[in-house]
Image (tube, rainbow, N blue to C red):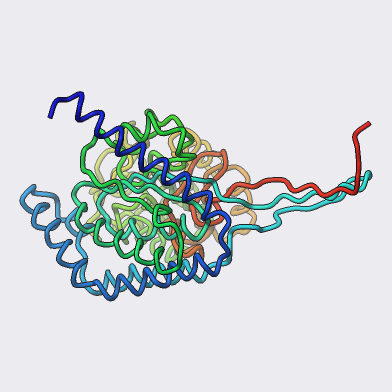
Length: 426
C-alpha cells in the first residue's frame, strides 16, 4: 500500500469515527440518567464476566512490553490481575452512583420585565481522550463521559492495545444492553501514531474538546497540535510549605507521604519550602526522614549546612518535575517568599501548607493561585476519587472551564433557558 493510500485509509477511518460519535453524542444528550446508569451497570457486569478474556489480552500486552524492555514502573501500570479487574468494574459502579451532571439548574433569576432565566448544565459534546499505559483509563474515561452525556473517542497507548480492546468490548456490551447507540464510546482501532495527529489537527468538525492523560511529551504534543480546546496540565510541580507554626511530627509525616507514597503521580511533591524561622527545627527532621525513606534530597545552601548529606540544588531543580524519589528543599524568609517561589517555579497544580496557625493557612490560600490548595494534608490527595468525584480524567491547571480534578460535572457546559409570557424588546 502506498503512503497516499495509507493516508486516505486513515482519513476514512477517523472521519467515520468522528461522524458516528457526533450522531451518537446528540442521541446520548437526550437520555435520562437511568439509561446511562443501566449501561454502566451492564458494562461492569460484562467486565467481571469476561475477566479471563481481559487477563488473556493483558498477557499479550505484558509479553510485548517485557520484550520491549519497558521499565518495572511501566510494567506495573500495565498489569491487570483479578483484583485490578474487579477494581475497574467497581469504578464503573461508583460513577454510576454519582448524581446526574445533566439538567442541573446552576442559577436562575427573574428580570423586571417578567422573563425567567435559568442556566442549565449540558454535555460538552464529543470528547477525544488520548492516554498512555494504564488500561483502567479506558473504563474510567469512558464511564465519566457516558455518565455526563458525552460521546467519547478513546486513543490508548500502543503498549496496552489488547487490554484496551478487551475492556472496550465490555463497555460496548453495556451500551447495547441499555439501548444506547454503541458509537457513544469508540476506541481507535489502530496503533498508528498518525491517528493521533489526525485526531488533533483534522477532527475539529467532530470533536469539541481533547483531554490528554500521560507523560509530559504526550501532553505537550496535544497542547501544541490540537485545533480544539484542551483540558489538562503539562507538569505537576507541587510544593509543600512548612510554616513556622508547623507541628514537627505532622510536617514530617505529610512531607514523606506527599513525596514517597507514589513518586510517579502528578500530585507528588517535588519541592519543600521551609520557613526560615523554623529551619533549624524542621529541616534536619524532615530531610533525614526523607533520606531514610530512600529519597535523594537536593537542598539550598542553608539546607546543606543543616544536613550535610543532602545534595547541592541547582537553579534547574526548582522547576523540575522529578516523578522519582528525588526532592528539592529550600529555606524561604516567610510565607510571602514561599508564595513568590511557587508563583515563579510552580505549574499551578497542587500546593500544601503545613501550619498550626489558621491565619497562615488563610493567607496561603489567598496568595497562592493553583488549582488545588491544601492545609495540613498531603498533596497526594489531588485526585478526583479522593474528592468524592468517583474518578477523574485528569487534573486541569488552566483557568478556562475546568480546573482541578476533571469529573462528570467538569465535563459539562451550560445553556440558558428563558421563559416569557409574550415580552417583546422595546
